[in-house]
Image (cartoon, rainbow, N blue to C red; front, side):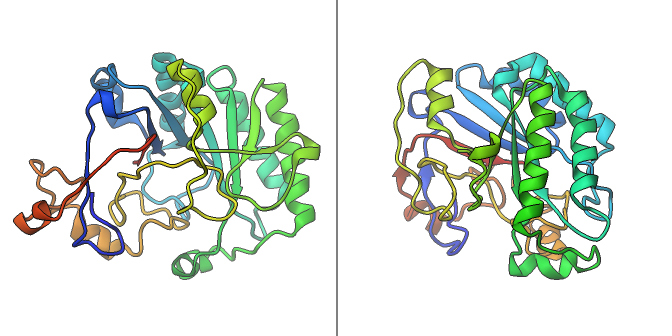
Length: 279
């Protein structure tokens, strides 16, 4: 795995079942994995599944949402609703997309996903510098605290009606009084439940201040996702994605690209609690 800041630094990460406590997959479309889930039978894993109602002006290359919903339900039937967590994020505010808009769209999705998941995670758009130009055409604005609290309350009530719990991801705002707790996407509590072995890990010090994730190794890679969602922090530009994807060597141990002899020489072995993978 290359260091995303310094590509000449490469770590070797063991994927031997004895060395992996759990895989955590991030995805907007798991369809390419559905006929390969048997390859994970020796591992513990769960999915963080992003599903919103945004159109192609924001999520230009996703399949139709009806197909994605079907994939969500199919995946839940395969692996169980505890191992699929719905992410309604990022929550984007604009002149058209206000509290009422999001409450309505969330309710429509929650009705379709009821019985297929037990938890929904929400987060509000972070204004990373390199996404501001991409989002400018959508006239995005930052919500105030009253809007965040109002929407979180509406979402919590809708979710409760469908037997779903709601948590936030890396948010400073405290919503515990309306039944929305701070969450952990890499969650030692859930991993302990799935594995049957008590796992207690410290907060990952390399993550943002309000992130609750425990220590893990991220084996995803930047500038590789062809969905090209306008809010994505992991793609700097479509041009970088276009350069990365066609040149991938399928025999390479890297997710994208080829490992040179020099990189192999400077590799080190590392093992942590969970291995998050974003697709």
